[in-house]
Length: 330
Image (cartoon, rainbow, N blue to C red; front, side, top):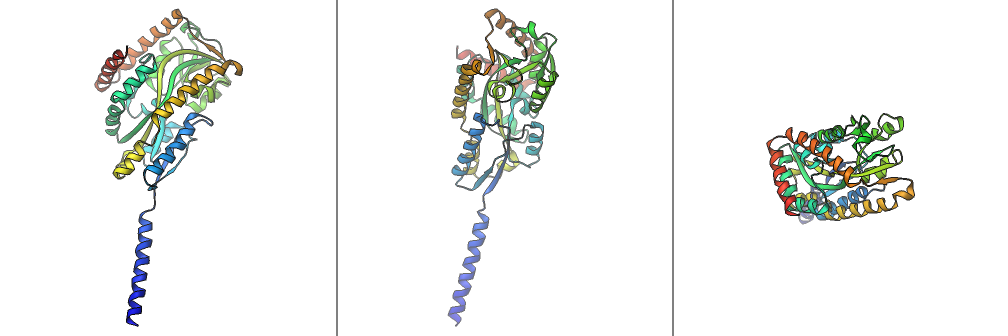
């Protein structure tokens, strides 16, 4: 009888230990916040992010995706308060945390993908990781959006066509300085208010990369001018307090969960495809003449000087290093 009681006790203790172990191994929830237009390459790669993180963490992290929140102010507030673990936000949104991000938005900083790839591969991401970390935010990866161009409800060929015209600008100083330098009047609007602004006549155009333009703006502004005045990226940021609690394997899974190179290639291919088929959709794609492009670039130089002068010593060093990297690709 005593032996039987001992066996029952052992079984009970083993069961309790098993329950405790299972409970301790409940996956960590990674709640995201972002805005990925339906059908966009961003939506596809957020799904891959979820798959990659859950697989590479050994199923110890469960990713709960939310890709339908266009309010970046809300996303960043929730991120910093720990209400969500990671957020995908634009450079414009990121600059409200780290003004030095404005360097990457300087007009005509990059003129081709060779320069972009060289600069980012040479350590640009690591440079910004250190700066974001000092702000209590972990930068995971940059997200390629592509070159930024100019759209309008009427044809736009040169800065003369937007003189005095109200154009949408983002909350970033770089965007506002660019619009102002062209002679237009910047109207700061969140992305969610851009379409209503175009439809009501509050604005007559603005600036956007091909992904956002094709998914959200083209129906209200059929004229798209390839000014290529900025190279746009998004950022995937994590709450640093949340990230620092992960073990080494989990950190690696989260930090490398975004398929950076594949996403960049898919974005470039998608942008090229859009330009090829734009005319069939009733859209007008205009490529400025060399003379007109010189006018856009002159406006960009003016804006760059204004933007860089207000960003501080760290930004100046980043810019100087970037300038050397870009020169090395020529």
